[in-house]
Each structure stands twice: as C-alpha cells, then as structure tokens.
Length: 399
Image (tube, rainbow, N blue to C red; front, side, top):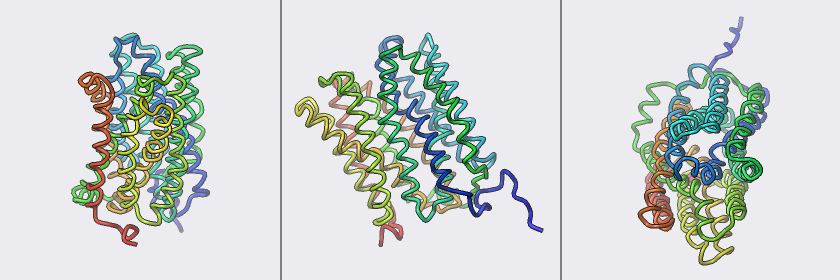
C-alpha cells in the first residue's frame, strides 16, 4: 500500500501540484495587496504622518524594514517546520494588525511598534515564502514564474500608491492606513486555498556548506549594496521630486510610473536571464540601477525630461535584482539548501538595507538636500557590479 502524504509533507515529496500556475497567481495577488499597502506605499504615507510625530518618521520606517528582514530569516526555517499556509496566514494577520496599530498611534513608540509588527507580517507573507514555493514547482521555467510573481510587486508599486494618496487626500493618513489593514485582513486569507501546504525542506549540512561558500558571500555582499541603493530611492523619491519642484500629484505619478515600468522589465529580464544566465543579467542590472539613481539628480535641471529619464532607468532596474539574484543564489545553493539560504540572504540584506531611510535623513541634513544621498546610493549600485562578476558562472552564464 502507498502511504498517504501528510498535510505537512515536504514539497519535495509532492511530485505535482494540481495547477502550479494558480499557485503563482495566488501568491502574486497576495504580494500585490500586502506590499502595495505597506512597503510600496510607505513613502506616500511618510510626508503626511511625519508632522504628527515631530517632523521625522525615518526611524519608524527603519523599524518596519528591520522587522521585515528578521521575519524573513525565521520564514526560511518555518517553511520546513509548519508548512507554507500557516506561515503565510500568520504574516497576513501580523501585517493587518500592525497597520491598524500604526493608524491609531499617538506617539512615536506606538507608531514604530505598529510598523515593526506590519514589517514582520510582510516578511512572512510575500517574497521569501513566495519565491521558495514557486522555485520548487517551476524549476524549468523559473524565470517566467518569478517574473510574474515579482511583477505583482511592481504592479503594486504602480497601482496602490496613487490610491493611497487619493485616500489620504480625501480623508487622512490614519483612515487610509486603516483601509489598507482591512484590505489585507479580508482579501488575502481566501487565496491561501490555492497554495500547497507542504513543508519545504532542506538539508542542514548542505545549507551550512553553501552558506560559507565564497560565492554565497559574494552574492550576499552585492545584494546588500543593491538593496541599500534601492531602499534609499524607494523611500525618498516622492519627497526628492517634490523638493525639485514637482507637485505632489506629479511626484506620486512619476514614482508609480517607475514602479510600473518594472513589470515589462521583469518579463524581459526573466527571458534574458534564462538565456544568458543570472550572473550576467545581475551585472547589467547593477549598472543600470546606478545610472537610474543618478538620473534622479537631473530632475531639477531637465524638468520633465529628467523625470522620464529617472522613470525609465530606475524603474527598469529596481525590479530586477530580486529576480536575477534569486536565480543566481539558486544556482549556487542547490534546490535543497535554497529556501533557508534565501531566508538568510533576504534577512541580512534587509537588515542592512533597513538603514537606508535613517541614513538618508542623516545625509540629507549633512548635505542640505538629496544630492549627497543619491550620489552615495548610485555609487553603491555601481560597486555591486564587479562583485557579482567574481561569482563563478553557472551553466546558464557560460552558455
């Protein structure tokens, strides 16, 4: 007799999923809603909520990113212990509860606690579990599957921030944040029915060996630099554009357009990475990100031409590191070690990348504007390119 699979059987023991593309669709929808309401819209919330808390809220945003990163570290372990659905459900609950707490906060401590709780929820319900589940089921077409999944975050960045901005204008930032909490709590749990509940197991010895390999450490270093560069612009773009003369509506529109452009970039980047290999693709991404970040400085001088240059270059490049970087890490780590190493990589780069809002505040104060932080973030992206080149090429890169 065949032994029935446990509801928490490892995904490696489950040969097929009824329709793996439905799983991609469900995870993509959750990422769109959760990241759209939180990570992608936090830069829209900050200018309106900051005056209620002494004029600066960079510390609360940093707490959000730190908590998101720490949750990612735990998610890699939890996926192998309790299964994908419980991890995702816990993340949804934490995200909604944290945003609700932040919306009613009356002091910086409560705001920081609420955003930290929301950050934990985002880390447990979006990128790390999504990539781990999708990579397991789409090894042969991972570029396309990851493009669709990560494209949801791109769509979230283009679609949700204008809606949040409209809600803030109509009501207040508190009402808009409560609305986001309600959307996460009500719309996301039903999507879990389309996600397989198996555990995603790795082997501890392989994970340890891969974690200390030079290639993994190089990927970790390059990913950290890229994440700092992306976060630095992500949370400062709207305010920087407004400081250079754009009205609020125009700044939000440009920010959303940059995020939307990442969707075709992901689809083309996925096909390109499948063809030339993730290492070469990630090197090109780092160079393009450096140019796009520097382009943000030209908005004041070139007006709308500068805006569109930033939208085109940064919008294309900012979406791609998660795709090519995950593919490169999968090649280095192997299938068994990948979920845990992905969690470690995401946690470390997130923890260090979480410093970006606070560093931006310090550099902006020291340089009396955004020129210094933008140049620093462009230099970090540029530095990542030669580091990626040191990673041993995979078969895809060599082919």
